[in-house]
Length: 385
Image 1 (cartoon, rainbow, N blue to C red):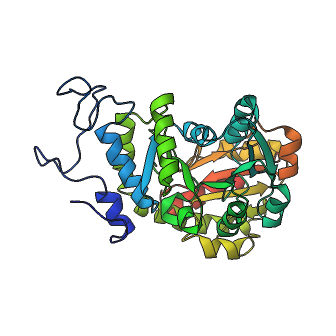
Image 2 (cartoon, rainbow, N blue to C red):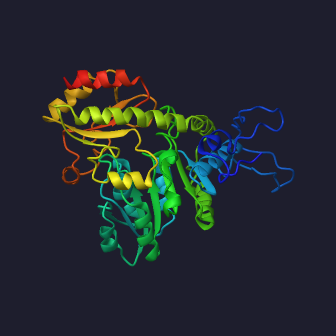
Image 3 (spheres, one colour):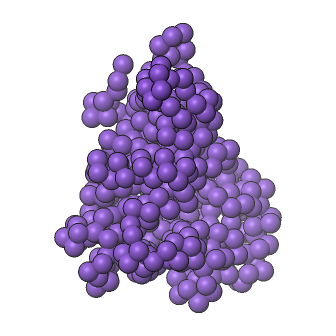
């Protein structure tokens, strides 16, 4: 039975889309197909799959499920978020121009600035919280706007609908990194974006045991090009990683609600604490784009950034005193994580850029997990003391 993305709710699609019971044995969970190659009836003739780089039944199930959750016709699983991001840029050619957020994941900045720029693609970094900045930055050769919203780590929010409108008027595509919100809280394609990208390592998988990436689109021409790149470059998700991520999608809605419920309480607690300078969380009235967040997102997520009073010493002491929160990179797992962007995830961003963006020695990023709310608050309270 097929589950039409237009007829069923998010939770139902997460559990059933692309995941019909096994036809041969009736297994409720689709089997894990580890085979790298598939038998042919005669040379050059096969049923559906010939080689796992080009396609695999387990990966297909995963891709169909994630596509349905993003309201997309086409989905693609990759070996990492960076692999998915690289594939988007590989849709372009030397001489093309990309406009990206000035504030974004340090790994994406490193990939753009130090790797992909070597192949003749030009990049400009712009504050896209103001759509007028996009209009001013557009060039005749601008072919793509790379939008991360909310941004990592300062949680700035951009108007996806307005930016897509401006970009499309100039013939540029829009790709949105939806990692922080997941498909549950934000639907970029419905707001006008051409592609949506995820580090599936984060909320999509949600258990800190898979590294993966995703691209979803409704554009058949783009899907054909992406499919060609998957076959040619080979940066696809493995069958086992696809199996695990698909397992995790079944609880995505439940997990995201729990992440947000805890994060709201944490944000309010931090905002009222004497040792905290400032809190950045889209769900707070104090967030500069709080109104836009309510308009284009279905929730505010589990990511919080805040400035602790003092300096690097105080920030370091605080992070090392935490017990429920683990000091580690990454985010989106069921466990609470804490990290220092300036030293850890955004160390590849030049210091002068970090200072300009507010990624200072006192900036701390929290990925609020789904542990007991009381334990999370007590852990923060004790460390701040």
